[in-house]
Image 1: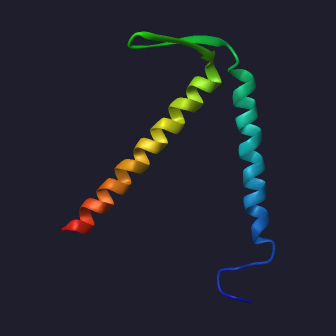
Image 2: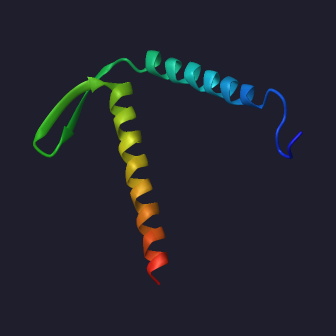
Length: 77
């Protein structure tokens, strides 16, 4: 058997993904209230879970861009 592998190693990812899915569904069902987001001159009415999800995705993407930019900056030196 190769080092660092074990039988059924893929099942851990499957179980972890299932747990995350259940937590995500609980989060969505508990945050269904409609809320109004005001940004500059625009008003958006969305379910709270969707507004939070959009915020999390945008934050993740900006973080990834910063990490890529810092890596590119280090390589140039």
